[in-house]
Image 1 (cartoon, rainbow, N blue to C red):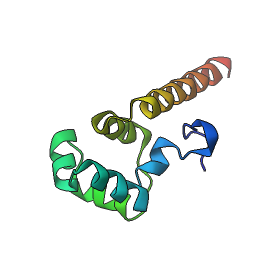
Image 2 (cartoon, rainbow, N blue to C red):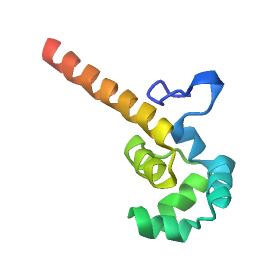
Image 3 (cartoon, helix red, strand yellow):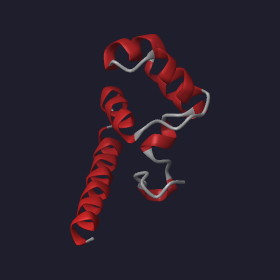
Image 4 (cartoon, one colour):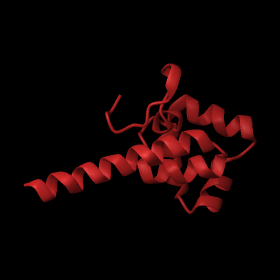
Length: 97
């Protein structure tokens, strides 16, 4: 798993991992949400959501948007903090170079 994925305690999947493949399908099904509805409500293209369902990894920004929409608050907070740390680290490296 990529280092920039926010890891959840207890060996759980990261937010990006939960939003791809079988996990993504099951998550939508458990909430009674179609890809079409998700696309309309989040502004993410239907085709992009199909790619995720086929196993492609979502970007962190889109994963955060969908995580918020689906009510994955704790996972979104962890992923958002991880993204902020990554961005700050990159800025520090640029300043130090």
